[in-house]
Length: 57
Image (cartoon, rainbow, N blue to C red; front, side, top):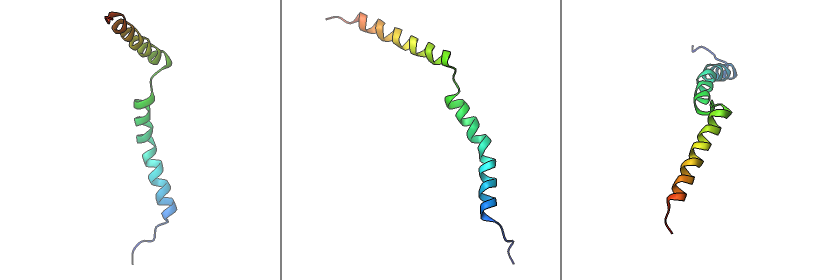
């Protein structure tokens, strides 16, 4: 006979095993500091201003 498994326990064990992997992906995706985001935003705004100021009418 086959071994009987509790599906709830198996599901929860899989979720516990996947949690660190998902956490690492989120750290890479969303793990920037507020200062880094502000610096990128300021740099983008500076480039946009430079391009807008360089346009001819």
